[in-house]
Image (cartoon, rainbow over all chains, first blue to last red; front, top):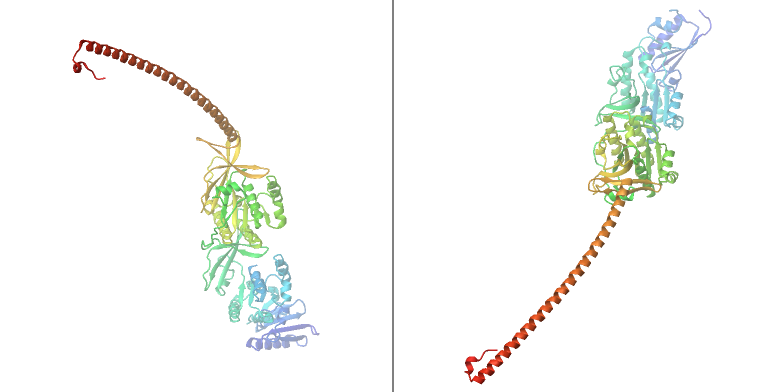
Length: 94
Length: 527
């Protein structure tokens, strides 16, 4: 476990849909449980800022992008499967 | 490619801005690739007529957890469309998504939603997809889209490839069902229909001279019809190209534009060679009246040639087109392919009211000249046949008009003479049993001249004889007449003498009677 802020996460959502809200809640829960104090979450609503979609090559929504640590990782879906989220974020070895 | 053209043409010519969303190439690559076709995407993008958006998916970066949808794509597309007011959308190989996203069920549902969305926003979309093994597209995409499906493929036949296009379905439209070859050329994509639907081109009654005065004479005195097609066929060295060049020269002289497609010689070579028989093409080239396109027939497939001709004709607007020789186009090609192609070419040119002259090489040798015409002769309005006549140790060129629709033409063979001063036609010697040309003709003519002189001499002699005979007869007549006169005189003398004797006798009788006092009445006689 690292003690500095090492996880910079960005969650792309579209409006306040059920999936978006589920993704937000799931992400917060997972991070609090496994990465307490080491993460920063930025939530981007593409319906308000459509220009930002091209930057991270967002197609599917919701998408969680791990900007740090490198390499960039993307996790799509509502993050309901905690195990896979953690694998995707490399928090837990497979 | 087709999609790109659709978009660029839409942006530049129809005022409909477009969005190009690519899933394979990135914007810089695409821009570089289509620049070769003369499309400047950067400029269009700067003018807000075009948006390029590269959608990149890297499967290794993506982890799936739970439910998701492609709202992000929608938002991006929606944003791009809104930013320039696009009317057209291209999704280049949207199927790349299938390899990037593992959940095909979601993807299919989302794509259907996407196409629905495009329709709702009244966007015209071109979606490209790769052809699958069994189905039309690898992932069965056509099931969702498919207001119109166009299939493109590339085929190689005899080492020459041809791209083909087919409209598989097009809802709400009567479309051609044939396969149409197409070409990606300097002006983008060109598609040519296989056959024209109707034969409805205008027929001009105007005639244009061929440049060879005697030939015009043979063609009813005025030359060929404008907008008609002329075939000049002949075995090697019969002067086909010369006729063609003369034809072109004559048209240039009238100030018309001429397009010459040469498949045997380079343009410089043509100009030089034609100069040797007094046909100066160079000034016309310099003036811009004559354009010579030289290429090897094997350079492209037949279709490409056809398209090239289309492009050249559309760009140059000639009134006369010369193809020399058309038979080279059929090199190594299926005869069944050549005829329709030429038919299309002829139809196209006729519709433009362009007079065309094709030359066609027939195989030398004994076969009849009507053979090996690629079956095009029936498409031609006028057919001139050039033939070598080998006789008396020399070959001579002859020309005749095999057919010429819509005019009274000569059915006589003429001798065709190429000299420094150009082309001339000479009457051949038409004897009772054969046609003579070349030196044989000259010899025969001289022979005839000598014979005539001899005959004349003979006649003179005969006349002289007659005259002298007449004189003799006249002399005889005079002699006879003299005889007759002499005889007549003799007779008269005898009569006179006898009359005198009789009178004397009578008188003496009378005297004696008087003396004897005889009866007066009984003894008197009527004098």
